[in-house]
Image (cartoon, rainbow, N blue to C red; front, side, top):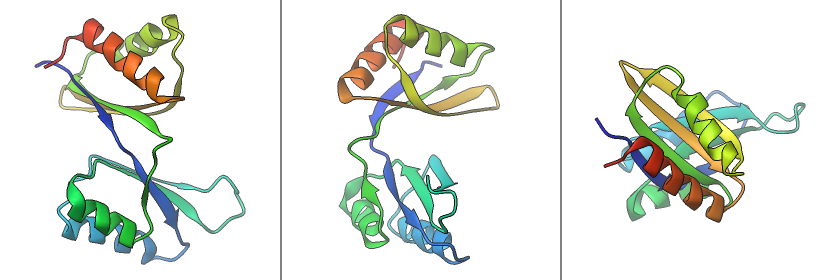
Length: 145
């Protein structure tokens, strides 16, 4: 199995501090046909705030994007992200981070998981050019389809 490396738009928005807030957003995306492979809910930067931040991806098509906007999510053009899917192996994440560091590219945010010999990672970079260069380097290093 080869690796798949793709640029991905990450959508984000605030989630109010009430039990119904998260399911309302996720259900709207589900009704629009979204099949998320990435969702993170975290407290806002203001620790005392009662608002959380939700990050989701991928969304495709106008219906999913309209659903996201209808529940207060926005496409975060400033979140330059790559999604990497492929076979898992020990040291894979260390290898990827070293390859990028040696090229002077900083990963500013990371989400990674492995299950049943498969890995999936979302890597965020400081800029679009960094993300593009990272994709080129990783395609050459890992082999892709």
